[in-house]
Image (tube, rainbow, N blue to C red; front, side, top):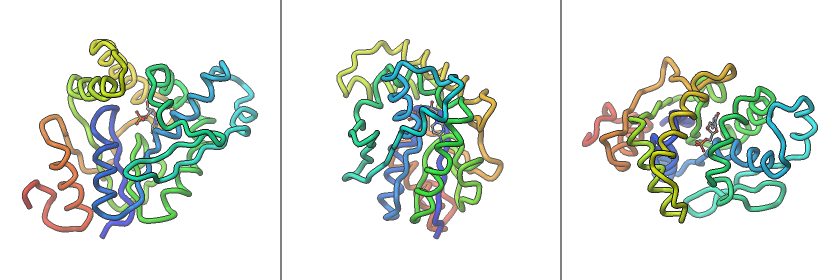
Length: 226
Ligand code: DC
């Protein structure tokens, strides 16, 4: 049985739903590392700060972010305040990649992620989990899907939350984020050499969960229906 599962991939590939589903099926801790970047972004937005400021350490030293399991999801707490819903706003969407580009931010969040991930058997979802945060993970998955499919999923998600944002804008944001996340200097989004690539464009959530679960318990070859 694999104890630490890393799931990386671009925005909208289905990582959160899949990682949560796999964690539930295995009885493992689910860790959404993007939520940490999002919470920090909300802090920057509220303070009107740019992630490129020189005295970043001072800003980070006043930030306390924690993730708490709540039902099927994760409650995100920023300096004592529940920001679970606020970190999913279009404003945070627009700025988060820029915050995640900062080496200072990445170094600050790396320790938090490792401590949480290694505290229990876990399914950890992000962009650099298999490459930087948990290179020792015993199962690495790289989830992807066509940009149009990812944008459509994100658009549905935003609409369900009452955000009447235009599909074209969501696609533009996804493409911009892909570009920034994959080309940034520090810990760019890329598949680890030993990761299993899964394209979710034409798979259901259940099929993807089943595939990863099968790989985690070491049964069959991960093909749906095994
Ligand atoms: O998964 P998400 O969309 O909530 O992630 C938000 C942003 O955080 C995304 O644009 C890239 C960044 N991120 C990252 O750089 N490294 C991670 N491990 C997780 C997220």
